[in-house]
Length: 191
Image (cartoon, rainbow, N blue to C red; front, side, top):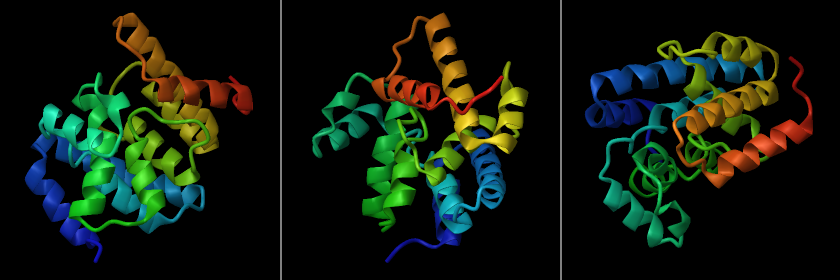
C-alpha cells in the first residue's frame, strides 16, 4: 500500500532539518501551482515534491551501495547532492510503497534532469529550482520562464546550472549534458 500525503509529510518532517523542510514546502507549493498551470496531475506533483529530498541527508556510502545493488554503478563518483535523487526514488518505492513510475521518475531526475522529461518530471525539476526560498542570480528570470514554457524553464535552469558548475570546476553529470542538448536542439526557447 502506498503512503498517504499526510504520512509522507510526517516521514519527511522527521528526516529533514528545518531549512530543508522549508525548501520542501516551497517545492510542493510551486509544483502544485505549475501542475495546475500545465494541466499535470496535481496529486502526483504534490507527492513527488514532498518526498523528492527525503534521502538528501542519508549516508553517501549507503546510497552508493544501494544503487550498486541494482546495477546503478555510474552514480559511484557522485556526492549526496546528486545521489539522493536516484536513491530516493528507489527508497520511496521500497519503504513507502510508492509504485507510480511517473512519480518515481520525477524524483529520480530532479537533480540532474534528463533528455525528454515528462511534464511531471519538468514540474518537479523546475519547482525545485525556482521555489520561493531560492535566491541566486537568475532565479527571477527562471520563475518568469516557468510561467511561459516548461521546456524553456528547463533549458534556462540547465544552462545556469552548467555555468555554475563550470565556474566551480565541478564535474557535470552526463544526464545534465544530455538534457541541455535535448532542450537546446528542441529549439522552443526564445530569449
